[in-house]
Length: 509
Image (cartoon, rainbow, N blue to C red; front, side, top):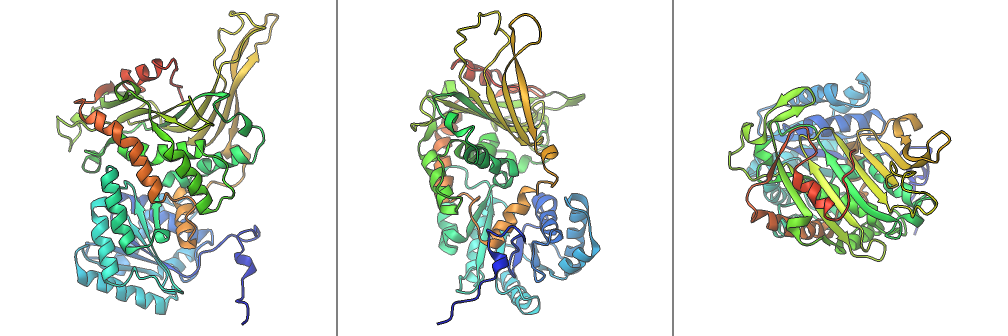
């Protein structure tokens, strides 16, 4: 028996050439939505422009619109012109556009899925996509089950030895633990778990992946990355925009379900996890699952959590309305736009260290960061007047928009007196590296096509996240309305009281 030939250029250890996806096609359900136009289509063009898609690549849109292939091509063209990260090149576009197809239909229409199957078979023959298909569900979560069942019924989800079918699911993954389990069961009845890619775009960000590099590639940080030295951890995702026209999606979901359950708890898992044996998918997932299994909300929940709803106020130099004044929201809505919770990770590494997670809309600025705040030094040689302007040391991982790392420490003020004051040392991605960071969706779509699930949460992670958050949501359900906070401020008073009770302060990012 002869050994099958292996292309040395497709060895992941070889840095001379980028890893290119093999022959395949992507089907996007919900191509008329904002996500498809602003993120998915531009990301696919950017991948093609970087030479990371095969010449035989195909893109199929599925929606209710009565479009021809050319109409769909025009929609993709406009999306690329407006939102692509890389410069537009006509020759790249022409080659990519040859593989565009559109299928009209609704999710409950059997005939539409038969047409989709015929279209993909034709592309396999004409474009050489090899029967490899990724189905991107850029649709409301309630439509996931019906689309999965249709894919199974039409034979598109069938796994074959020499070809693959994968499904990409956007958040939210359910609205509580019971619905997440139900959704996972439906999806897994059609696609095996290794073919399910639950996308969390935060995990595709370079700065999020740099948490692992910072910790495990450097001897400087890992020895102090524990409860002996760290006082508490703050994970913040702040947005300076309101909901605009997203009331239909957001009402009933709220900030905790929208951001904390997936983005912030994943950031916590990467920050708190132990060193994996390798960066292989199973090893990374095992370490994250161990952390999440040991994580629980700090009790009592009425004192260690906070929620709010933005009211009218000034955002920068603009007067903005409150949530209840925006179109689409009921005046009695109890949907929170700000959420803060306190978690504890019950492991030897993190025992006694509170993790404060917060997210909100209409806050003073857009920022996402992970801040490790260290214990105060025992100031034996210094009297109180020397260190009155000195805070706690901090290591801040800036996820967006100003990607980088900040270290805050004490330094002597020039002069004859011994006076110590906080200073910052900054590392910025933009100035340290010549190459631009790829958009998160570029990385994640390429990983789907390569079949590398390292950055995608598995069933257990999703369910454990809900197990952490559900008690908080249940406690809030019995507390009436969220506390109002003025737009342009850092959230309701209860969020500040929450950390004050534990003798801490929120950082001002």
